[in-house]
Length: 292
Image: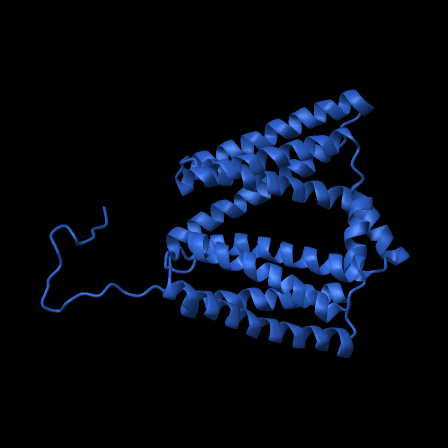
């Protein structure tokens, strides 16, 4: 099975799972404020009464907004991977979000007698995401060297790597009470393994094997060790000197490391070598490229 077909299946399956999750959350009366309190507590370890009130006020709006942003993105990504055009993908993604919000509003109306304005928030989340996608594609046509599938893939898998890294970190640090620098190191190992595979095969599409694979792996680990050292120093600075919480410090350091690692991977580890050509040999017939 071709790689493109595999990604189509994964994308559609993920979109379907998330759609089902949204439906179940709506049907079971998902408590967004309670969920947000748990997440926020994982970052800060304490939730003050002031923060609790803010969470209770905003979580019922922000979480559905983000949830439907994700739904719109997964729908758009699945359609694009299936070969649907840019405009059609945006339009069909919006239709999916709109259909689901209508169904959910009807379900709430029948269940509790009032659908409220949740559907407006959900629809707005989808619209904002699709507007961002449209702007991204326009920027890609205007600035192809900066905004391209490579940078998009790096951001997507960078986010997934960060989620994995943070998940392991907060589980070890928050749930098991492990020393934060040791928890950070273990989370780093999990993130590096995932990042190397996705960076090599999907983002930068390196197909080297043998000695070249070992070179890439060695450079990748060396670069991540360097960024780990930088992150650990920054973490210690933020936690011990500035007195920020472990979670907030981890987020700030994560942004710095994400940018740092991109330049390492792009310009050093997976740098593409220009094709070797002989000065005596001219371009082969049909080798020239034309803008149609």
